[in-house]
Length: 162
Ligand SMILES: CC(C)(COP(=O)(O)OP(=O)(O)OC[C@H]1O[C@@H](n2cnc3c(N)ncnc32)[C@H](O)[C@@H]1OP(=O)(O)O)[C@@H](O)C(=O)NCCC(=O)NCCS
Image (cartoon, rainbow, N blue to C red; front, side, top):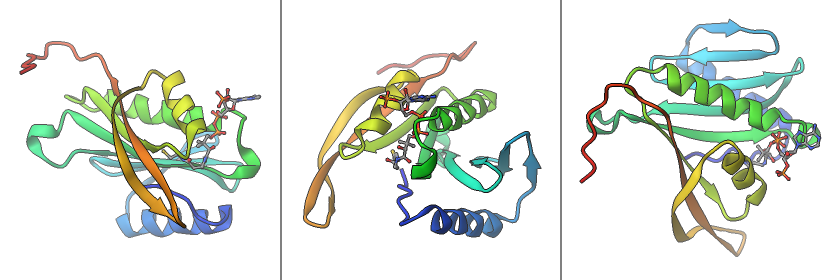
């Protein structure tokens, strides 16, 4: 998972625009939401009207792992937090994951330094399946990383568990 931790919202907006324009893909406008769409790679942005939050979703590139998507780059500008925007972004990503044929899992990783993000994911049904100790080191601080997953319903799939 890629962390989006820019110094400020302006830097973040510029970064997402750069990222999106590099993909040169269609931009479909919704009410206050935009979806930048590629075959297997998405960025959801919340706009008010400027960009105030974003999350990315990409399908695993390996054929044998293509039943998984990875959620990354979750960020809401500090001035707009605790208004449900983060939850809406994740819901939009989950809806997109459900719309992808054959996708059954949404995976993500969250730092132990971001308990508010972990709470949000848990509220939406994600569960921790493993924790990597000493995963991230920054400015002399050490954080572990929780790996979380949400299982989507999949009809007609043949399960091989072991
Ligand atoms: C994690 C993050 C994306 C959450 O975004 P957000 O928009 O604040 O998320 P939400 O508003 O949906 O939920 C956050 C909290 O606000 C609460 N909330 C939501 N709407 C609310 C409202 N109208 N009034 C009061 N509280 C509200 C939620 O219940 C939640 O509370 P809790 O943490 O005590 O359970 C944001 O804090 C962030 O960008 N953090 C820095 C980057 C980061 O850590 N990213 C995650 C990487 S994995």
